[in-house]
Image (tube, rainbow, N blue to C red):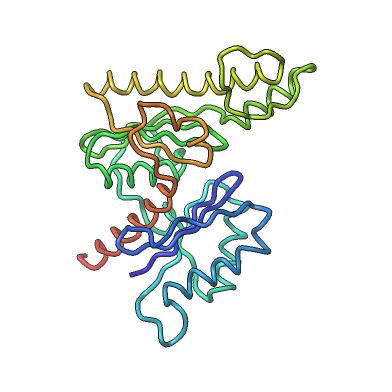
Amino acid sequence: MAVLAIDIGNTRMGLGLFRNGVAEDPAVRLTHAELDGELPKTLQTLWEKANCQGADAEEDCEIIVASVVPEVSRRVLAVARDTLDKKPRQAGQDFPVPLKTMLRDESTVGVDRLLGALAAYVNTQVACAIVSVGSALVVDCIDQEGIFRGGAIAPGLAMSAKALHEYAAQLPAASLTPPDQPFGRFTQEAINVGLYVGARGAVRELLERYATALGGWPHVVATGGDALTLLQDLQLVDSFIPDLVLQGAALAWEHYQRSQMQA
């Protein structure tokens, strides 16, 4: 079975083709502004590549959507349905994410966090910390038994920079250039140093706390559009997997299909 997975984040979306939970190629990334122009062409290209088109299609194909932006999700679902003549299925709504949790209220957690944790655990089979660096900085944890413990959410780099610029009268917009030394020699450079060092310090502190709670250091997986920019030289990170949520969406659907066949 081929799965065309779509991950809709706050500023970007990713699209990837998977078979048996493995990506065929690196994901395609689009901004929300490209939804109407580029999305139909990208969907058609991936669908044809999977040989999911028409009577000669070689295998069953599904479109699986993971979204944390309801308004954009509705538009993407409509474009996908109109372009490919097939109804997409939404992870967490049309089928569950096969993950046990320790959460007080599972309805409040973003499906992207659960899917990322699922993919990280399937890949490693050990306790994991998942560091997602995008619009928000999210550090989650799944333990040795594959139970999602929860995590922490903080503003991402761009969000933090925007807040400083908008709420402090004399602070300029940050360039978000990774600092090459610890001292900000002018205001914009000082903001860059503060944002990067602050975010990296938060990640390090959270990982240390998770290691203490777990009784051992977890495998650390980094993902998200800004992960390499922020963390590429941080030795605490074991793996960079940019398509983690997409892979989780494909894995969740394949698990659901197997469970339905066995029922």
